[in-house]
Length: 224
Image (cartoon, helix red, strand yellow):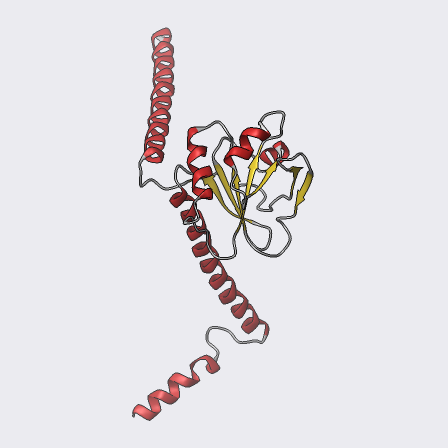
């Protein structure tokens, strides 16, 4: 009897593992299908432990050493991690070369490829638009934990990561900025409200303080 119960327990455990694996596989398939839809949204990356950006150190397409400080306070930066080989990246190279392609005002674009040991500068010069800054830096791919290309990172004007993820189309990249701006505005409003509440508390004014309701009391007296 004990042997039968043991066997049944093992079978149930194996069945649970099998079902769990199938569910995870099904979820991954649905996520991939959503990415491939023409109107699909950009896929956000997992939340990082640190939200600080990293400066870029590498070389230009001509082999000159280059250091870009994207973490200093200033204009926000879009880092586009592209390669010369993937078909999806080709669409972004073409989009960045199109004068009709517009990033939000004040945003600087930097295309980041891997080192010359992984990429051909000659091929990249054929793809890269003259007005777009390109830095070859495998170290940057490591610093930003880039899983694959194309991959996009939005570093805000304070040097913090405001958004990141993969995308299939340029419109999806713009959605990263829209979401980041919306989230920042909501967070800023909440922070201002919290600071105001703390300042009132430090002044000895709590939620039931008469001064907070003086205007209402006067309005009620006038109405009477």
